[in-house]
Structures are given as C-alpha cells and as structure tokens.
Length: 386
Image 1 (spheres, one colour):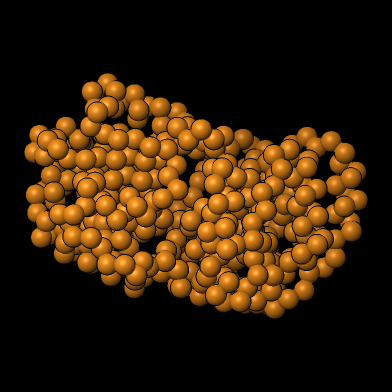
Image 2: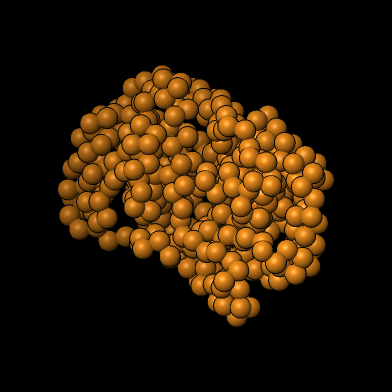
C-alpha cells in the first residue's frame, strides 16, 4: 500500500492514548464494506446489553446511512481515499478511546488498522468470515498482512468451520480462537400459510462461484414441467445495483449468461442487493442454497426464521443446520438431485408446512441473536484478562 504523507500518520498515531473500560467498554468496529441488516441486529443486541459501539464503514451498498437510522446505530462512513481513511480512523480512536476493537479483514488496510488499534491500547479481535485465509483469493502481500494481523490481535472470532481448520494449520493456538457462527433475530410474526406465498423458489445471497447457483438455474426446466407457473427469484447480483460494490462479478455474469442461454429470462426474476430481504422471506416457500459451504449462511438462517423451507447442497456444515427430512432437505450437489427435491416439495404443501415449523424452531433454539450476544460477551471477558 502506498500512502503519501506517512509522517503525518505516524505523528497522529503517536498521540493516541491507552483505552480504558471493563467488559462493557466502548467498542469500535472496523473493516466493514457497509452497514447492513446482519450488523444492525448485532448493534441492537450490543445496545440491549449496554455496550456502546461505533461502526466505521465504506458504504459499498449505498444504504449504510439508511440502515444506521433504521437500527438507531452509531455509524460513520469513512472516506474512499486510503490516506484520508487512515487519518479519519486515527482521529476516531483519539476521540472515542475504545476499550475494544473488532476488525474485519478489509484488505490492504487490515494490518495498519491492527497496528493503530494496538497503539491505542484497544483489545483487538479479528473477525474472519470465510475466505480470508484462502491462498487463491489474495496476493502474497495481502496474505502476509493477514497473517501478521493474526499475530497482532488478542483474539480471533471464526464464523465458518473451515476457518477453524485453517487457523489450526497455521499454528494458531486454540485458546486464541472462538467459533461463533451467524445468528439472527427471531421474527415475532407468524409465517404466512404456504398457499398464500407467491415465490415458489428463492435464492437470496451474494452470487459466488462456490454457491453453485448454476445448479439451481439448470434445475428450473424440470420444475417448470411440473409447475408451469412457478415463480423463481434469484437475488444477489451485486453488479446490478448501480453502486460500486462488487463481490464475484465474473460468477454473476456467468449465471446471467446461463439464464439467457437456457431461455429462462422470462421465468427467473433476478435482482441485485436487496434492502428488504424480509419481504422476500415472508412470501417464499423454499429457500435454495446448493453451496459448497452451508454453515452458517446468514440468509439461510434468516429464511428459516421466517418459515421458508431450506433445500441445501451437501456442503460443509449442512447437517449442523438442516436435518434432512425434518426441517428441510439436504441433497447431493447435482442438477438432477436438486430438481427432484424441489419438485417433490412443491407437490406437498403439508410437508412444506411441517418443515417450516421445524425450521423456525431450529433458529429459535440454536441460532438466535441472543446466543450471539452471549458468545461475544464471553470473548470480551477473556480479553479483559489479557
């Protein structure tokens, strides 16, 4: 990373004062691309526990300010310029003096953010969401920065099972790692009856190569032969948003090309990043996720909390969420297996209703935002002893 006026950064960093606070101390969250619902729910849970949290975000989605107001959260949108962003962040540390810092791997600035947090005396937790340690995803310099950050941080929160394995392979001590999967708030409203729901099949996730959205597209003709009026929605094509935010644009364009090649443009509704995910969940019967990694996909948990029946691929951790034949179906990651599962479910409203009730029960018992808050509080207690 090339930063002009690096002497100014050094001077500003030197002026930082040590942070103070107990387990409920002020917290600064860095490295988020934007402020979205899943972070908003965490903000509400922190506030419920009396913890003051400030989020610094890039706002790739263009919706961060709206979402911040919706969740009554403290959110600052940082400058796009790397140098201005660093100075802005240092200024926030000097003004807020947080006791804790939660850092998401944002890329080129991750290591520098970690150094600033340590200089400020904050207890630093690195939060890894899934692919940060995959060597094919980063340059050697970026990987080196992430691994140095692993050494600098006081604790690591792993949100996927593969991260725990990757950290162990890197020699990170187990007592420095806490596994906390995604959790969601449980909607109080009762789900709509299946017959009143307008979306038969829903994929609502960022479209990534390893989520195998092409399998869903290829399965649709078989579904349409049995249900000619079936409504299918695939939401998560980030390059359709009109914002600068992109996740896996090549994979997105390949899926859209496949839809055109198969002549399904008029049968599959596509959308970009949606700000009203709940409205989709309320109206959907089946949530489809034929991915290589299932546990604990946030959109999957949200959908199940609204009583949308999950049909997922037999990817990593699938059985930890979906008990096949009880609260949904786990199927082989093939077009034929997926198509057969979807057709069989759509034929049977009674089974859909039973699975929907069980899916909601799974979320209420095992994946609530309250459980997330308890786990994060345990991490903060550990940090207080460091």
